[in-house]
Length: 109
Image (tube, rainbow, N blue to C red):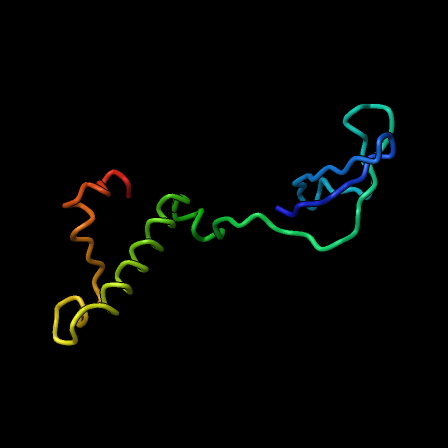
């Protein structure tokens, strides 16, 4: 959802609002109720989220984060493992020591 910046005409304060494209207007009522806020035109940021396909499949943000973490850990192990070891030759996600140390639990995924 785009993040827009507005300047209040009452006290010249700046407010940042997440608005959908349907809710967007170049001027909106001020929160104090005395005036209106006008859009400040500059670059905007978007809120990162799941794709529609991921939402339809039921993927949660927590699940996506854990998947990225698993890929990073596998990549680290491959880089530091000897060339003839299982970790270097395999493409599987291997989460050995995190569970042994108690850093991660299956319920975290």
